[in-house]
Length: 172
Image (cartoon, rainbow, N blue to C red; front, side):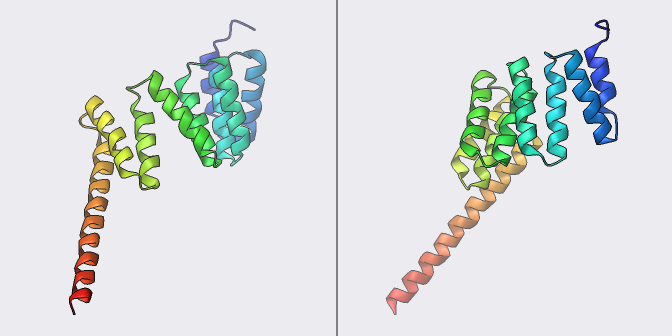
């Protein structure tokens, strides 16, 4: 039984459309291959699809425990922490990924988007500049940079309009 290729078995498992059957197959797989991180990660993805984020988090953690350098599981774990509202630890996961993998465009873009969402535009732009230094043609980075610049421009013009109204009101 140990002559089975776990990558091939995993491919067969994840291409099972029925989620219950897929879960049973993946669970059987981790019994056969308890150190196969990709299987734990796939169970985490399935739990996420089923909106069980706590279960997803736990399986991503098992994947990382099985293979601490498994980047996809680390990203999934960090993203799930953020989705669960544990922003501090989720961000910490992504910053650690970036520290160890400074060219990881996916994590850099993730951080840029997080900072954009909370209107920390300078921080978002810093991450986007790193992406564009690695991949000058990255469309996602260009789009978000443009969106931030437009937002900042409208804020600046809004501030100018407010200032003009304030000045006009005070000169009458």
